[in-house]
Image 1 (spheres, one colour):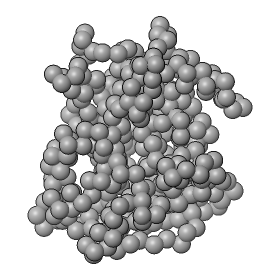
Image 2 (tube, rainbow, N blue to C red):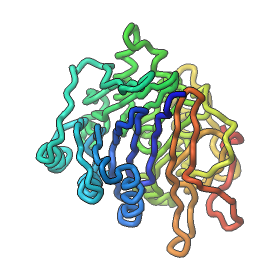
Image 3 (tube, rainbow, N blue to C red):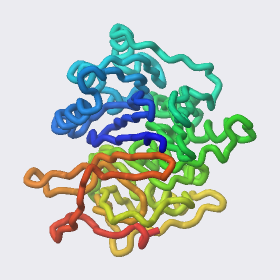
Image 4 (cartoon, rainbow, N blue to C red):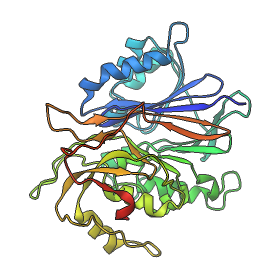
Length: 372
């Protein structure tokens, strides 16, 4: 029986970080950064990472920095210094200047920059094990015709990877925008090396922390057709009647669109929680501007105001922000996810987390099946 490929999606607050352990034992980290709740989560995160890098096994074979937003890379130096890791190879999307000196720091530490042909999609590497996993580089430094501002350019530049193993696949998207999605879709149309059907991925790491404002077009969702969708985000921003500030991610609309259009999303999971931002205008705008063949998506019943909502679902939609707390006395609860993938299928472990709904839960508790 082949060894499993494992992926851990860490709870980093508002940010992103994941670690892939290939069957051969090689390790790849994709992003490691945080903004909101960074200080309260870092010690637990580093303790968890130390378990992956015990004495005598300190090599990180690949570090992939998807793009230059600090919530995707500002924990890398602390991780290397605290855990004592040696990074062997690395690559990054966007400009070196986007990383505030991190690229030069990595090079000074002896990490080797991975170079590509610039022709996508291309194989980044194949793990040297029985029926080894393959890592595809689908996009890197994609053009951004929709907007010219720096924030949009950085996100559009995101590295997008697909990892395949034992007939299953995982799509890792960073903060890829709709421009990135269109760039990839354009590359694979008519491609023999990587045809459109190859975009189908059992697991989708949802782009840009679940933002519908920038990412997750219906065309992309239909092409990827995930069975499982994972979001890394934290509750950040105001949703009052008079103002909307901060990230407000993930948007509930994004998760509804995935549930409605993926065509493959599992709906038989154990009931589990996640938190999302709800804005009726998101639904109004989508329904007004939806493309040909896209169906209406109904807003929540029984509420017409913007708010953070506490959700439960049997659909395979998972977020690192699981449960809303009650302020300082009872803070929000995050969840990390460990995925095992082998010839028998995909298993998801919610870090031994058990959700027991409470009467004092805030927000609107509902099941996503009733709302799509």
